[in-house]
Image 1 (cartoon, rainbow, N blue to C red):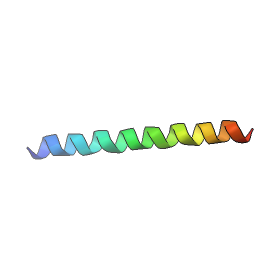
Image 2 (image 1 turned 120 degrees about the vertical axis):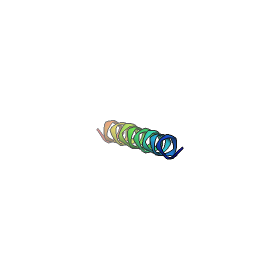
Image 3 (image 1 turned 180 degrees about the vertical axis):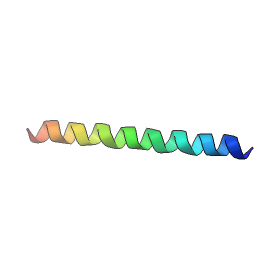
Length: 32
């Protein structure tokens, strides 16, 4: 049970980081 919860948390964190990177790249492209 605990392992499953840990995996889910890792997936959520990675997805949030990817979204932040995508938003940052789009903002940089818009500034240029």
